[in-house]
Image (tube, rainbow, N blue to C red; front, side, top):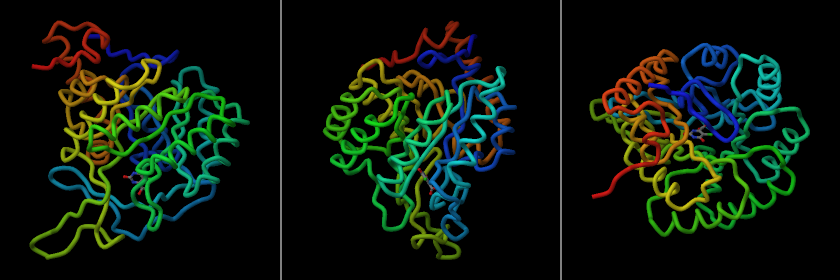
Length: 311
Ligand SMILES: O=C(O)c1[nH]c(=O)[nH]c(=O)c1Cl
């Protein structure tokens, strides 16, 4: 089976990559991703300046996934922009993704201007769905703010741009959000971000799992797979075909990768399972996906991508 993934005018050795926020804070972690079977990588969502983030413990692996309230810790935009600019000079390195998540629209726009004026030749991911900055509601659950943000972004940003979206749970929300997104020349959407503000309770200790926000945090892993698949498929059915889709959420094995692709994803991102297994997870996921494709007689991703059947 050929796992080569095409995404606009880019090709990747596999459709697999990390989810922003996982294994992508430092240049060492990012280099380890490049050395793995991941097709490419995305950097930790950046703010203009270094951010310490929320108090620890702020991430926990759980039997059925994970919970996090990191609070947008990152080294600052320049650190990640320097990294991708250096790496893109190497012809053996695939096209890279750079993520930004300002804690205000002004900060987002400043960062987009900085990137636009740079020689970055990869794709930029505007994170509209961070659920863990206390006092800052997610932009993407405010449809007016989302529209304003996209209009302002495309006024000043001329490189390929994608948006990271939170999960939606109502079909009319899919209709409304898709109608907004279809007005803009987006390269892609990335769906889903963690399911915001879950609460894990440890019965033995009668305590929450993480320190920030009284234990409330974004859920990842197996908990979120059906919601992730629904968002991928709902948007594939509604978005202009020029807007590609990155499927994120709940991938533990090759079958989950296959399901995301079947639902319409062009690339998939792995967060919780990468946190649990490290970059070798991409070797396993690639092998498991290839086995499934071979068993079904599929030779390339286009043979089944987006071809989910209904009853
Ligand atoms: O707390 C975080 O840093 C965080 N955590 C998430 O689960 N999604 C995000 O977009 C971000 Cl920005």
